[in-house]
Each structure stands twice: as C-alpha cells, then as structure tokens.
Length: 353
Ligand code: SAH
Image (cartoon, rainbow, N blue to C red; front, side, top):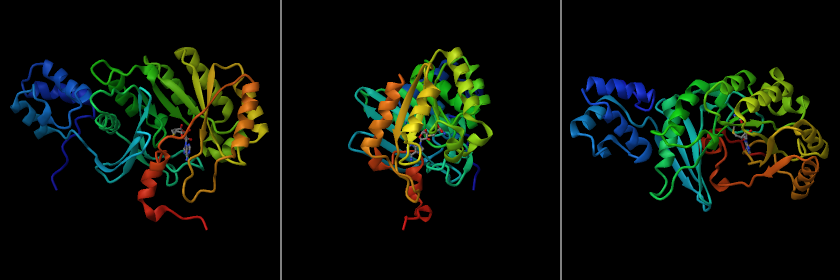
C-alpha cells in the first residue's frame, strides 16, 4: 500500500506556504485556498475554480483534503445532525451540528475515547486511544459546516464532544485558530466554549493565550468525596484547585465561567448537594448549566424526577446562583458524547438484565 499523502488541514498554514513556494505560485493563492475551505465550503480541490487547473491538480497530487470517512450521518426532527467519522487508522469520533433559532452550534471531539474515566460517560468507557491531530479537529468543523444550507452560518463552537480538550491542548489551540481567524471561520473566541473536567495547569496555560475562549468546567459534584467517585481524576486534583484555576481564568479573561452539572438520580441530586453547590459557587461570576443525563446502555444511571429537579433548582436560585437547566437536543440520534460510536459497536453493549 502506498503511504498516505499528508493531510492538508494539519499544519495548514505552513503546508500551504511551502506548497506555494515549491509550485511557484504567488502568495495570494494561499489566501484563495483558505477562502475555498473556510468560506466557500469546498468539498475538494477540483472545486477551487479560481485556481489554475494545474495548481488544483498539484494540490491533489500532494495532499489529502479529507482524512476521515463519514460512517454515519443522522438527522433529528429538531434539526440536529450528527456525524460519525472514521479516522485513517480506524478510530472513530463524533461531531454534531445543533440548530437553535438563528444559532448554528457545532460540537467537536478532541480525542478518540477519553482518559478521564467519568463513570456515567460513554466516551471514556474504554479509555483514551489517542489525541486527534489539529487537522482532524479542523476537519470536523469543515464537514459540519458543509451540512448547512447556503443561507445558514456557523455561529458557535463547543468543544464538548469526545475526549478531554485540555489533555490535547496544543492540537486544539492550533485548530481553533482557524475557527476564529478572519481567513478562517471568523467565529469570535467568545462564541467558542472549551469544556473541561478541570485540569488546573492546562487551565492556566489557556489563560496565557491571547484568545479568551469561554471555559466550561464539568463539576458534577459539590464535594470531593462524591466527585472522586463520579470523576475519578479528581482524586489527584480536588475541587479547591479547580476553583482557584477557574478564578484565575476569569481574572485574566473576564469571561464568565460556566460550570456543568449532570444531574444523576439519587446520586448527586439531593437537597444537600444543591446547598453545597450554592455555597461553592456563591460570589463567583458564574453560570451553572444543569445537564439532563442521557442514559448510556449498560450503565446504571438515570435522570431524576421532575419534582427532584425542581427542588434542586429552587435551592440554587434561592442561593442567588445563575442556573440554567439545559434541554436535551437530538437525543433520538444519540447526540451525546460517545454514544453513537458506542451504539455502532454492538459488541460493547451489554443490555442490563
Ligand atoms: N472532557 C470534557 C468534555 C466532555 S463532554 C469535560 O469533561 O467537560 C461535555 C459534557 O457532557 C461534560 O460535562 C460531560 O461530563 C457530559 N456528559 C458526559 N456523558 C454524558 C451523558 N451521558 N449525559 C449527559 N452529559 C454527559
């Protein structure tokens, strides 16, 4: 088998510049290719019609534009679309397009699998296989953008797909450049949210970037004892260290923090948990996003009753916490992290007795 050509979307700027130099093409050709990829939503080099045919052929000769195959494309009634992508080495990741009034949000993955081990999450059940390359992350953005009709525009990005984004920060930051740059997707950093389990050194690194992305921290428990059970990496970190890193991020970025909390019946949904959570978040410029649990086949977790949810909410609101209860979107198509990949692999699904 002949070796694969380099993936153009990896290290895009450097590869295009080298190409232009070697092909004796003027510098503006690089800008044209960018425009075709990010603004004109090209599906292949052959579509880049303002490039001379010889240059298009030369690009195709040297590079792969796409490195993944779409294994599955599902659409829900509410307009949510989800892609299951197969990578060149056989790994699979998911990414999602969400439509909400005029918002067009994409949710992208950063790793194959996940090493954080959150007990309720489908992505990490078999650990992490590898980090995605920057090109594989950019490719998700472009493939999802190509699902839009010509009058729709991407407005938001959430890095809430498979994997722990801060465990693959180099590649993520390289990819996100193309999200916010003028010659990229042109989505401003305040419309890009990175969701993390809470890795303090990486949060500090993120704070040192020029771009102030929004940060969402997956808390899921108001005390270390419970969080150690639900989010095992917490044993080596602890909520205090995460809150301090979050505060430092807020100071530098000025961006209001988001904390995420998946409400699990009889586990983290008791009135005492709500009271502890209110105390933890009090005085912080923060939004608490309460996420409905999307049941994962084979896992023993469920969603609390509406009464229990309401009681939880009331305590937080009385405590003066800004809280939003998120609705589930696209759940009929398994549009929650790791679930579509998992449902494809029937060998992994153990139906509860
Ligand atoms: N590793 C990152 C991104 C994970 S996905 C993080 O931990 O934030 C984004 C959010 O979905 C996280 O808060 C994650 O805990 C949550 N999540 C995982 N599985 C879920 C499920 N089955 N139902 C609802 N939310 C889930």
